[in-house]
Image (cartoon, rainbow, N blue to C red; front, top):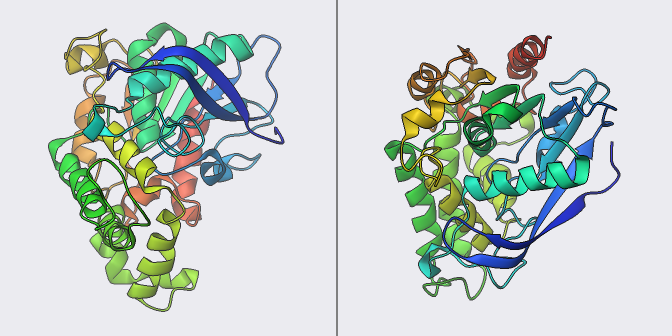
Amino acid sequence: MSTSAQSFTLKNFELQCGVTLSEATLVYQTYGELAGDRANVILYPTSYGAQHADIDWLIGVDRILDPTRYCIVIPNQFGNGLSTSPSNDSNCGLAEDGFWFTHYDNIRAQAQMLREVFGVEKLALVYGWSMGAQQAYYWGTHYPDRVERIAAICGTAKTTDHNKIFLWSLRAALTADPMWNGHGFDGVPDRGYRTYARIYASWAASQPYYKAQLYRQFGYDSLEDYLLRGWEAGYRQRDPHNLIAMIDTWLRCDVGNTPVFQGDYAKALSTIQAQTLVMPAATDLYFTPADCAAEADLIAHADYLAIPSIWGHRAGNPYQNPEDEAPIRQAIAALLQP
């Protein structure tokens, strides 16, 4: 396991929005050792709001991804505050300025980093949850001969209209704050964070989750306590410009909407050659089982397996929930069999 994150610099990197950054930085973390034949690399892209340290809990000998067998690389997506983001690069803006990142930008940067730093052309697995799953689909569609397996946990290859309504509501919560000036924030958007967190919490877990008050087992003494300390406090650690930047990326997720496929989403999915695990959560409100199953039907070598959980979207990132980790761990072990 590496001791610190590394940075990879891309020169004159052209974004899909049309802006060219003279320098773009991709921050990544590695876990485990690269095999001599370079055939043991697992790429594990980050999810919304997350940085590599937030999602590496599932890396371990007895966890979902085993660093004693694989070299696992977590690239931080653009906009997350570590890689090039509005918070650390004045050349970055938001959609109001005609600036946004896409997953097409993310995977092209990741591919260049893997080639130049690791000498890796082919991946044993691209594993992703949520926005990480979206990036996994982009990898499978745009580099079909470079990806042996895909594990898309609670994510789709195209953001649905229903999902967009959720994202627009998050964006509106932040930009309705008095600190918003039309292009950014002049101070801390306290009202925005508060509203944003409550909208997010209402979608992230299911109705049965809240009815059962499962959050109480983690030390929250009321629903309001859970929303304040379990949701609002966490997102207050993220720069609001970055939160919006990642929303702008999520809104534009569509594997067909790239220069390669010219808007043909079904054609893009049909090009995937990788053995693909499509694994939604049974109660996910963002990426519904029906939407995920419909995509699985368009992929030649796809297996569909839902997580039977009331945790909603968060069942796909079950760091507090070993009952949901177990089926994911078993499914990934089966997927990685020779």
